[in-house]
Length: 225
Image 1 (cartoon, rainbow, N blue to C red):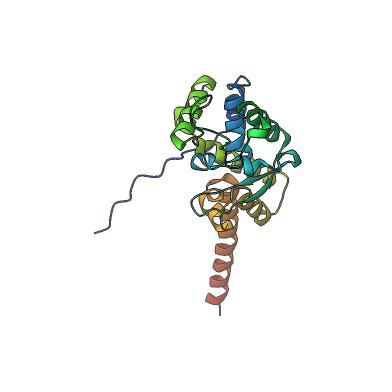
Image 2 (cartoon, rainbow, N blue to C red):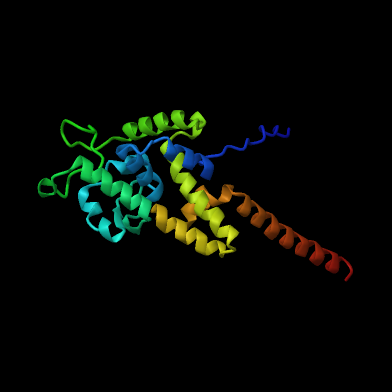
């Protein structure tokens, strides 16, 4: 007896489009906390659980456009070159939450759990989720995309799509993305993200088409011998 085929998989977008990302950023209305948080998720490619790990020590080279990113889930930590908007957002937030430079400590969290009072405990991942959901509602983002992972996925897809548009070699794009988001290997990037894109699907079709055509040619030639 032949097993019945399961239902065909449904396409499920996992990332914010560039238009949605811009709408989400506009929904902050220049609030220092909201703006800095979104830039940390997008500009640094962080997971929600990694935001609370950020301390002032990681931002000590911020004036040079460099930021140290600790990673979770076996990711690769390291220094990243960041864009001017991300650098500016983080510097403004740090200056606001820690106005007295002389009292700053390297271990102070960049995103405390309490925004304006209480102990300097790190912001938890649930706090990150709540902030993104709040901004998502204000921006009219679909509820299934108003979460931190969709922002991180958006960064990956926007870089990938731009690289493909510029005709960059696929292996260079994947390696650059793996380094940016802290994947331990490029295979993780390829498996989790690139395999779902239109460009990769076309690549698979082209390779399979060429290889299978070659196999048919070989079969035809062998049959005449």
